[in-house]
Length: 311
Image (tube, rainbow, N blue to C red; front, side, top):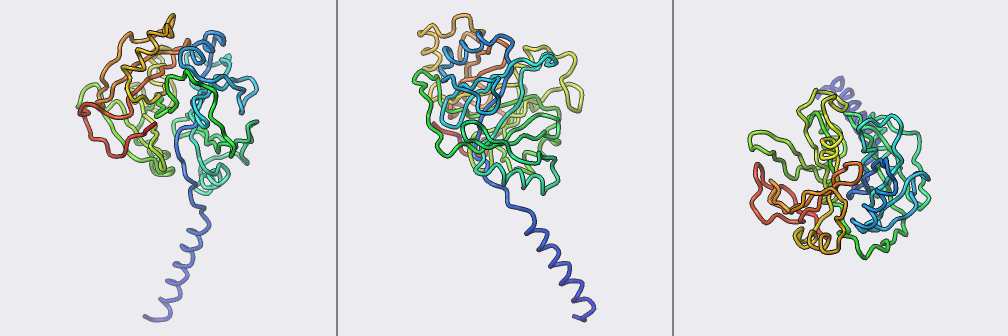
């Protein structure tokens, strides 16, 4: 090779190597931290999450006006006062656990994503920051406290939030963030009719909890369609607690009179993914789904492409 060609080649290689070294590695994203929802009736919402669901009521580590309903040492539902401009929306944000919040913030910033200047510190010792995904949904990344302890929740109907879901307009647009940038992995997709995809499940990069795109046929772009009702939006914006047997869990709730005055489907059912499920709704319409960890029937539409979560 002539020297005049060698020098530029070496320069380009060195430049690419330096660029690669300047981008920090992405810290692990291990699973779901929490779902944050709004309430228009704090007392009714408290009865639902504390008595029906059986979660432990604790101070909110991120917001003194909120309440934390804990199911495990690192997973909970955060309930916040309803903002004046909320409209029919009852979802504030989804949140994912990471081993290094500051490292993940730096990683996203290095990739050109708009991030806050620093991480926040929760009253429990957790560290976290929030960003917006491509469709404007608020997403938090939480580094749990080192001394996180399991809550006193002996009556919890389950202790593992296995997935959260929210309304998505464009699978392709959201994938640029969750799949390409963060490394979420395909798990399953399907729909009410096999020829149309309504739900797309993406597992966390270093865990088995997943995010479910609830695809809407409304107008493209961000925002809530004008024709959508609060109930319809609450069906899309949801969380799911894993169960060994949804039928047993439903019987526990029913026999314990824990479904009194709670809006629910009144029966268990088999999901299109071959997993048993039961739907109930908090007082503002956010859906809480009990779902079997494993499928007991063949799923429609696609095969599972990753391992299931477990207790």
